[in-house]
Structures are given as C-alpha cells and as structure tokens.
Image 1 (spheres, rainbow, N blue to C red):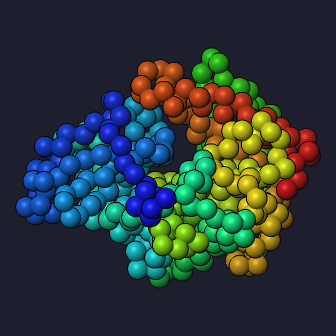
Image 2 (cartoon, rainbow, N blue to C red):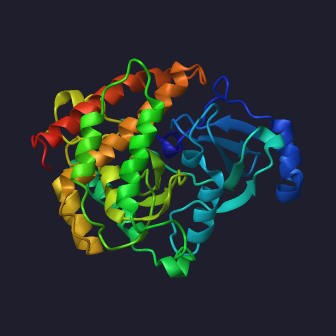
Image 3 (cartoon, rainbow, N blue to C red):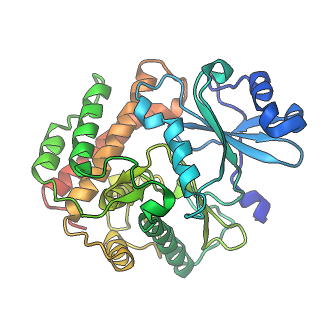
Length: 359
C-alpha cells in the first residue's frame, strides 16, 4: 500500500450534516483572501461528537470544526474552549493543530466553529490499515509512544502556556464523578441499562486528588492522534480538544484506559473495542501504568477507580450519542449501535466493582 493511501481520507458529507459553503466563503474571505473562491468541502468520517470537515483548494487545506447537530450538551461541544486551549498550547506542545480563526456568529453556519491547520498523516481506527505491516515490536513501540505523548501533555508548564488560571483543578475528581452522573440521568432512554450501582461505587471509592494540576485532553485515543506516514512510530498531531481543561492527570489517564481493550479481556469486551489495542505487541494496562508513573513521577494507586470511571464516562458519552439518534436529532445509523455499547461498558464496570478486573 502506498503512503498516500494510508493518509486519513475524507468522504462526502453525511446527510443532515451539510454546510453552507457560500456563507463560509463569504465569511472566510477576509481571513484567507481570494483563494476562498476555489474552496471545496468534504467530511472526515470518524468521530461521533464534534464534526470535522476539510476545506480544500488545489494547493491548500484547512480543517473546520463545529458542534454536532441536535446536541443537548453545550459544555461537551464548546468550540471557544477548544480554540483557546490550542492557542495556548501552540508554542509549548508541538502536537496540537494550529488554530487560525474562531467564529461565534451563528448566522454563518448556525453554530460556533473554528478553523485550524490540516495535519497530513495516518489515523488508526478500529483496525490497523492492511498495508501498514507493523511487527509486534513496532506495534509496542508505537503504542508506548502514544502514551508518552499523553505524559508530555501532562508535563506542560501551566504558567508558561498561560493556562495557570484556566479551569478549576481543585475538586476536579469529585466534580467529574458528579457531573458525568448527572449527564447519565439526563441522557437515559427507556431501553437503556441501569448504572445506579456504578455511580454509587464511584462516589464511595473516590480517591484523593493526585496533587498535580495539568492540561488534560479528556478524550485521548488512537483515532484522535495522527502518526507520521514516513515514520509511523511517531505521533505528529493530537486532535479533538473540545473536552480539554486543567485538572487531575490521573483522571485523563483513566479516560484513555477506558478505551484500552487488552488481549486477555473478556471476548464480549474485545468485540466492542474501537482501536486495535488487543493485538500482538500491544502493551497491557499494567505496563502502561508503570511507564506513565516512571515518565511523569505520578503514582497511580487506585487503578480500579480510574479505569471504572473511564469506562462509565464512555458509557455516558455513548448514551448521549444514542439519545440523539433515539429522538431523531440525527439520521446517522452508526449511532444506533451505541445502546449495545452502553451495555458492554456497564458490564465491564460491574466486573471491576466485583474485583474480577484489577489491571
């Protein structure tokens, strides 16, 4: 497979998610100049939250981000927050896209949106591309580098980035548990699972704060990362910053490990995986935690809590997505399957609570 075919590709825009290209051209002309007349737009296929489009001319590319249509959760799709974080990080963390323009005039496309530079590279989704041909040794190196880049984010100097007064790191763990519990209640549909036991357990087993406030991504996973086409061991971009803030980095690690299905997990959990973390060479969660501790100096003493929280949070996000489908706010058929995913995540949480999953 050629390198060009490994580059993350766009597709035709999904029904119901179209943009008013004429309005965008008119708005962006003062920013991009005469080149906007040749703009064409397509859509990146991944993601179930904020929508991502590629604006292209013959020679240049930009990425436009906007909230999903029909979302009830404004705080999870805050374009201004995403734009501010990227603006702060651009000189201190080399992996974030460079923001170009933010628009809060809803007369343009009906919502806030922002423009950023396009990072050309490889995005890994549920399976490795068949032409990538990585050995287990290379898979291990690539995935450990993936976690090292997360650790680098947690090591950013807040004052240097101008984010020392951003967010509310004190009490972050409690606010996250309480906030995601409320979001669960708000997104429940008649056919959903029962998470009362999980919410109760998270409240009763909440650890002390780690004592460190860091920039946290809050949705760090493989398909939010871009790898170099010529050197796929290396991360060159981190995407989707809409939930980023300043808070406890151990909660961020837990959110990422919520996605991390490993080779000895139950088959029903592995079948629901969203990235190839259970193949030969992929590090297991215990190994990832040790490397994270060694790299950051932070101690992960209550792994079951952070892992359970990461899974529960994904259960809530999936239910929020399914809620939009259930009530007809989106026609995207991918969203229908999130009801089953919620059942899987709830069941994995219950195994942790029962002490059957410890790492």
